[in-house]
Every structure is written in C-alpha cells, then in structure tokens.
Length: 611
Ligand code: G6P
Image 1 (cartoon, rainbow, N blue to C red):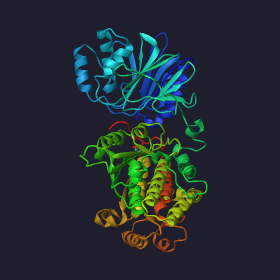
Image 2 (image 1 turned 135 degrees about the vertical axis):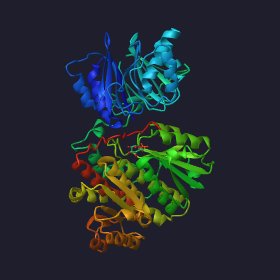
Image 3 (image 1 turned 180 degrees about the horizontal axis):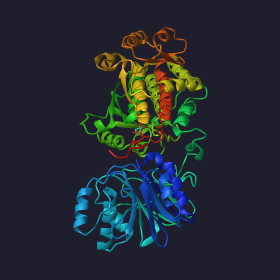
Image 4 (image 1 turned 120 degrees about the vertical axis):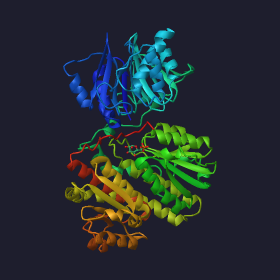
C-alpha cells in the first residue's frame, strides 16, 4: 500500500528520499511527502505523484542527513495536501510516516481532542503522532518509550517511522502487520516498506517482525519488542539486483514484465528440475511433503490475480493428484467460520507476501491446525515467514501494478507441486511424470513465439480501443484465464470487462451480446474443443466481434471468428501459461492507446496491506 522510506547517516538525505519514493511509487501514488531534520524540521508534502513533490520542493533545497518520506494510498481522508504524510504532532515534537490503519483512531482522537490536541488532517496517522506526543510530555519519558507506550494502545496495523525534534539524531521504526525493511550500511541505515529503495546502497537487511521496535542512530541499531525485551537483529543478504527494478529500456514496467516471462518462468523452475530433467525438487516443501501427499483437501487462498492462479491450481491438483480443492478469496475465508483440521492443507498465494487479508487467513488456518504453505514472490515477506513451508516463485521484482509475470510464475509453481504430489500419490506414472516435466521445459520457448507476434495484438488493440465493454470466455483451465484477461483490461484501461465460463454465458451474459460487445474466446484444442466451437457459434449468431485465441494451425475457428491470435500447442495443464500472454498484451496496448497510466492505474495499489 503506502510506501515508506527513511535514512540516517552521513549522506545528503533529500535525493535518497526522492529516489526511494520513486521506487516505491508503485505501492501508492495519490500524494507524497518528506520530512528532513537539520537544525530545524522541514516538511514538504502535496497531493499527486513524487514528481509533483519534487516541483513543490524545488527552489528550497533542504540539506540534512536524517529524514523520512512517504507515498500514500488513501485509506482515511481523501488524497490532498493536508492528508499527505509526514504528519506532525500538535506541539511539533514528533513527525511520522505510517502505513496501515489505526482501527481505534476515532476513540483516541476524541480523547486527545479533550486533552487539547488539535488535528489538521482526517487521517488516523496524525492521531498516532499526537498520541505519542501526549505520552512523551505527560509521562516525561524518552521518545522511544513514548512510541512503545503509545503503540501498545493502538489497535490495527502499522509500519511507522518516527522522528523526534528533541532527539534529532534518531529514527524510531515499528511494525505490526505492515512490512518494514532496514538496510544496514557503514554508519548509515536505510528504512523502507520493501527492499527496492535500499538495494542500490546495501544488500544487508533486517526484516522487522511484528511488535518489534528499532531505535536507530547513525552508528547503532537497537532492536526490542514493544514490551522492551531486547532482541538480536538478524542480518540477511538481499538476492536482488538494481537492474531488476529498472525499466530496462521498456516504456513501462508492465511491458517489461510481460516480456520477461520466458525468463521468469525459467527462473521459477531453475534448480528445481534436475539437470537430467528427470526429477522435480521443491526444497521448501521437503519437511511437509508427507502431509501434503496425504491431504484430504487443499484450500487455496489469495486475492486478485493470485486468486486466479489459485483457480488454475484447483484444476491442476484435481487432475494430476486427485485431491479435492477449494479456492477461496482470502477476505471471505477469514471472516467466515471455515471448518479446518490437521488433514487440510491451505496454500496461500501472494506475489507480495504481504496482502493483509491473505496474511490474516494464513494465521487463522494455522491456528486451526491445518498445514499452511505459501507461494510467494517477495523473499522474506510476511507470508513465507509465517507459513509451515512453501515455494518461492522467483519471478524477480514485479513493479507494474497489474500483475503479469507473477501470475505465470504462480501457475508454474502450482503445476510443479501438482505434478510432484501426483507422482507421490501414484496418480501419475513415471512416463506421465516425465512427460509433464518435459512439457514444462518447453513453455518459455513457446511464450517467446507468442511475444514475437505482439505487433498483431497491437493492431487488434487499435481496433477495439474505444469499446466500453468486453466479454472473455474460457472453459476448463482457460476459465481462470478468462477472468484474468478481463481483470487486466479493467485494471489498466478502465474498460468494463467480464470473464465467464463459456457454457455459463447462456445463463446471463448472452443477453449483453451485440455488435458493440467484443468477445474474447479462449479456444485451444483440448477435450472441450467442440463445445467451445459451439459457444463461438452462439456468440456469432448474436453478431458480436469475436477474437479467438487458438492453437497454431487451427482452421475451424478461423472461419468463425472475426480475428484469431495463435498460440503454440501445449498440454492443456500448461495452456494458462500461454493463453494469458496475448490477453496481457492486448490490455497493455489498449491502455496505452487510451492514454492511461499503465504502471500506476487509478485507485489501485500493488501491495494491499490494509483489509
Ligand atoms: C492488488 C494488486 C493485484 C494483486 C492483488 C493480490 O490488488 O494490484 O495485482 O493480484 O493485490 O496481491 P498479492 O501480492 O497478494 O498477490
């Protein structure tokens, strides 16, 4: 959600904050702000993007070696200059940036108002700044203690970085629910809500855990719990290169990430298929594989695109491993009263590993005794740290808000898991097992072939860029891809789109179909090919423009559809990895042609760390 950056050390802090905020802008981008301490405190903030903040600051160069910055995705209070972070307490002693939601802020605000505190903004974060100041002044305690005592009164989630004007050589950071990473340099420390602003300075990092507080001076980092119990920080090495978080010559991160998929899928299975190509090794499942193989039921949870990958997982585990699967939105699952026991396996899918609802669902499933596994992309994020085992997707940083390469990496991991479990359960014999491994290795090359024809998809986008509604249809493995195609279009081009199981179309959406409603049909040569051909006929009879994604050499559908996009043939279980690529490209090109901000679509955030 919001992006947080902080620095204390010997360098000029302003460029570190601005560059860091630019790296984090994909997390939220409705307003931005910075605060720098030198002999006095300087706060600049405004509605809009980091570039607007730069314009706002220009002409007022601020020097200093300690500061904090924030890019916001509004939860409480509309995006405007006043609600932008940092927030300063009424007496001016505390300045903070906050990611998360203070759930009891109304009650706290009422109490503080009665005590004479005033509020400029509508945010819950300003309440926290005033609460800390109240505890500090009233309790006559250190800044650090005031922060700890104030946070113990807070309900909800936070990742906060705080400066105190009375102790100007210190940053205080704390976390509950919202991620914070600390970069460790020589006589300098960097803070951020993810590692992207840190990696250009240091690869040594400390991931803050929930209820931990870090008190940081230029030369020392003290880690403790909210209750003042000292902790020993664990320094880890980042496996991330600066080149991975640049656009690398592409116009947008999304396009770069679409084009990265042959490599990112290879990275997902690299080292997991033996060099002879005869075995699958998933090290993160090593300890738990017997329970997974014996599972009575698998429940897959996720949000957004990760939920769509989960739907593909349902087909994979049922087909290849014959285990019953349910796929749940994490946000629904956690607020129901799900029936779970130790024979259940819950698989949480999350690119960021930080989505608040998915994390909460993980905790619920663990408390209920289920085996909980994660399929996540961001190494060291909260979900992999809280699950019993899992598999990293290793797709590299995904910066575009609309998820692309994370989806194909998630599906790749699910396929590897299902193949492995299917073999262990003797559902697959050696020959089938080998066949699927061989097929998987072919997928990156097949995606390359699709990407070579991007120009054709661009021409299609030109034809349909001004349409208001789209329908996406698919069956079997391609039903989740229809949902994902529709989601991509909605997210970045703001065109209304619906994904539907092709046969289900007759029960409603068919009423919408006319000349003005293009229908994208995913129609590969699998066991339901004849059925989907019939569905295409039904759509054609209603005069819709049909764009069909077909296998190379298909002649039947070419005669029926208005436009076809070819993808190479592959076993049906891998078809989502191929069929999704033209849909990603089409959404991308339409959004660009409509002048939309592809990497930062309105109202969306990359990592949703609030419920
Ligand atoms: C946000 C993002 C989506 C993503 C979803 C789940 O809505 O914009 O692209 O699919 O969160 O995120 P996760 O990190 O859990 O996969």
